Length: 316
Image 1 (tube, rainbow, N blue to C red):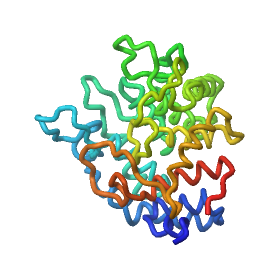
Image 2: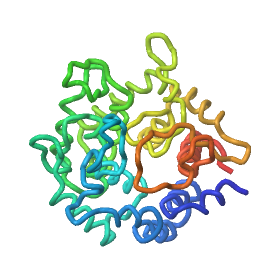
Image 3: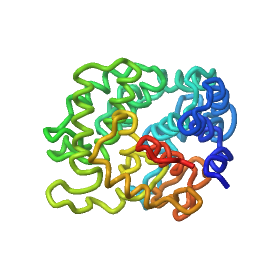
């Protein structure tokens, strides 16, 4: 089967992005398919899980219940990552159901840390706040407070680290990718500013100086997991996530991506698809297709193909 046909057999959240990013379909066709995301499939299902208090699963960053025997076991069912997932799905912010969900989020949800402010004001960690800024920009919500926190938290090496309040002085790829995605989303929604643009470019340079996955000092792979495909990405860094960001911010390309692109090409299967290699464990609201390691994933394949199209590769 043709890889585009394979992708178009997926959920509306995948289909509309395939039409936009891989087939150059007419805008009306893309919009019609996108309109289905909030009404059927995974997007509709996730919207239906929001409670009247604006929360998903009774919490903001973690669900209302966490196994006390596994206190560090990540759970993806609470509000923050549910909103991130809706953005990934590409729900139309103008849809009435989406507008209602965002209104509940804005008016009722406060961070469940001591003295926590409203959701779109963010909290303390850069990786969290970067995603909040992406979400705020996507839904047209005020993000100036969380933006100021991010700009103030940039480290001298150009990136960010969620442990900077504990003395960290070297950036983390996890934190940095979350922040630069948020800054880019804000630039697109708000027009940005010189300060925002400079901060984002410095963060991208932090990644590019390491060729997206190698230590600058030794050239060694920083973490083997950074070379593995994953979805959903949550707050985790990987090469594909970095490339998917850079294809948008650097349409002219960058020679420092060459090795990462070669790595991505090497993972393509004979049928034209990519496998899911790394899952970020934790309870999820429901299972999407292609969530099992070692099996083809439409999400990974979609993201990989649009990156390689940016690099000039044929996608068929």
